Amino acid sequence: MTPADMDRAMEIAQDLKDAPHWPLAAYLAALEPQGAPRRIALVAEDVKTGIVVGLAVASLLPPQGELETIAVVAEGQRHGVARRLFAAMAEELRAAQVTEVMLEVRASNRPALAFYHAQGFVETGRRPRYYADSQEDALLLGLRLK
Image 1 (cartoon, rainbow, N blue to C red):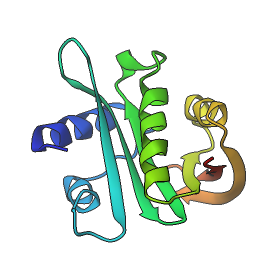
Image 2 (image 1 turned 120 degrees about the horizontal axis):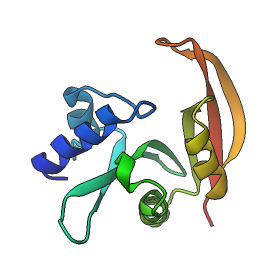
Image 3 (image 1 turned 60 degrees about the vertical axis):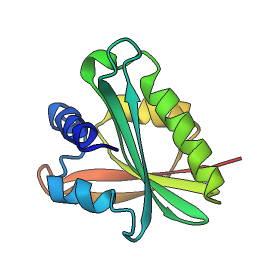
Image 4 (image 1 turned 90 degrees about the vertical axis):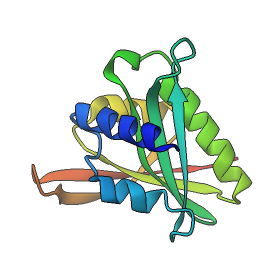
């Protein structure tokens, strides 16, 4: 991910109410090549303009991985961008010997839940009042990669 891609990724996340609002330092740490745990970061670009319209970040602790964020610009949603990003991420995770992907999502984030369920994720647990800003529960989801 280039510095320009990182700036755009932060813009995307900040513009989406339910996306993680990480500070720049968190993005930099997540993308540090020598950092631990190792991470994979992917971006989706508009084929016509080359502008970044989505991103996905996952951490690796084989045989498990955690999808830390997947976000798509509002005007790019419902056009398959997240699905293609997740399919590419799943291939990268398989290549890294990851067989199980986990994530957490706000219980109220119905669009994200619908997306994750469509990808095959199932609920594996709940963290009551996990989010400090709203005292909202986090749902834990998991998926076995084939």
